[in-house]
Image (cartoon, rainbow over all chains, first blue to last red):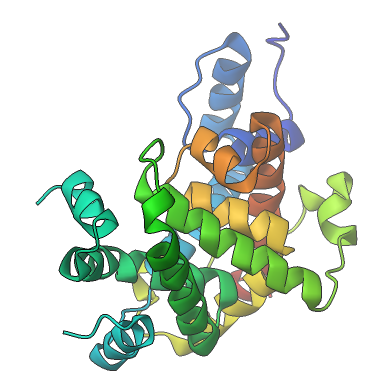
Length: 78
Length: 188
């Protein structure tokens, strides 16, 4: 397996491919080493993580009227 | 009362158990529907149709998979069906591997996820960005990254192989990141 220095493009691809997965192959170690020392890739990593967080935190609540309409629609009113 | 028991009672015609199952999942289904549709009216319609399908078919539910997986499948299929009947997406930017991940335009962002609840302008940006993402990619991104399902569960719901789920997730992440970067980076 290739353990040569990783390029920014490769690191960015890796981030999108494997975010959230614990990988410890030699190639992943080379990529983590690059990430630790490359400002651009760190920013890219943060922006991908932030993208996911934005969509996780943007939520809507079922209000009382919506709940009532649902039970009414299903014929399951209290 | 356990979910298994609730399902059994609902299968035997217990309406209170059926109503409890609806109550247990309405928030999850409504939120997921909204995240796909980005429209509260359409999300409510999708939620109603999803639970109607549950009420009609609860008798056939075998319990082999989780009820939540079954509900996610109904919402996802509803979304994909709707998308096929609507405008066609432009796949060129998501299919262009070279431009999808670019070393250019890397900058800090001027806003953090904690600011989402009080920032309506940001909500519009997020809605616009994900609506530009083709539905087949949107569903995978939402199931895997936002709802936190496993790659295997996501594959089962979308009827995709594991490599196909990973490929779509990779492209969806990069695409959305690029869309948001245009609006949120300090350099713009």
